[in-house]
Length: 284
Image 1 (cartoon, rainbow, N blue to C red):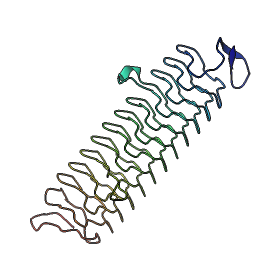
Image 2: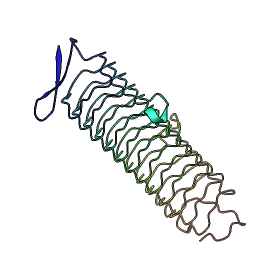
Image 3: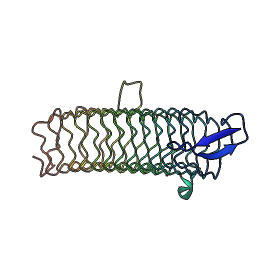
Image 4: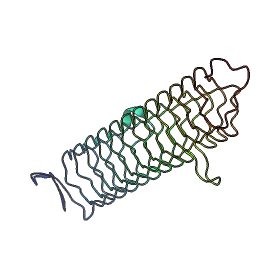
C-alpha cells in the first residue's frame, strides 16, 4: 500500500494498493498539491489526473502517460520525462502545464503536441527530439535549453526567452517566434549537424543578436524589424523571406542569395558579404 500525501500538511490524498508507483494506474485522481518528489512513476498512467501545484521534482516519469493531465504550477525541476506522452494528438486532450517549472528536466522524445506551456520555466531543459507541434510556449523561459531535432511546426513561441538555446535540426515551419529572445542561439552547428528549418516562420521583432543561422532554411520567413546584429547567416536560404527594416549590422551574408528577399529599408551598409542586386530599391 502506498500513500500519496499533500505536500504541506501531510494529509493523505489517496492510498494505492500497489508496491510501487512505477506502472501504476493513477488515472482520474485528484493529486493537487501532492508530494511526489523523487517518485518512481515510470510507465504509470496519469491521464486526466489533477496534479496542479504538485511537487514532482527529480521524479522519474519516463514513458508516463499524462494525456489531459492538469499540471498548472507543478514543480518538475530535474524530472526525467523522456518519452512521456502529454498528448495523443488531440488538441482537446493535451495536458496543461501553464506556469509549470521544468528547469533542467529531461523531455527527450516526449510527445508534447498541442500542450499548454505558457509561461513555463524550461531553462536548461533537454527537449531534443520532442514533438512540440502546435504547442503553446508563449512567454516561456527556454534559456540554454537543448531543442535539437525537435518538431515545432505551428508552435507558438512568441515572447519566449530562448537565449543560448541549441536548435540544430529543429523544424520551425510556420512557428510564431515574434518578439522572441534568440540571442546567441544556435540554429546550426558543425557541418555534420542538420541546420534548423524555419520556412514561413514569423520572426517579426525577434532578437537574434550573434545567433548562428549558417545554412538554415528561412524560405518565406518574416524577419521584419528583427535584430540580426552580428548574426551568422552564411549560406542560409532566404528565398522569399522578408527583412524589411531589419537590423543587419555586422551580420554575415556570405553565400546568401538575396534576389527574391524583401530588403526594404534595411541598412546593409555595415553588414558583411551581402550582395545586394542592383534592382533592389529602398535598401539603405
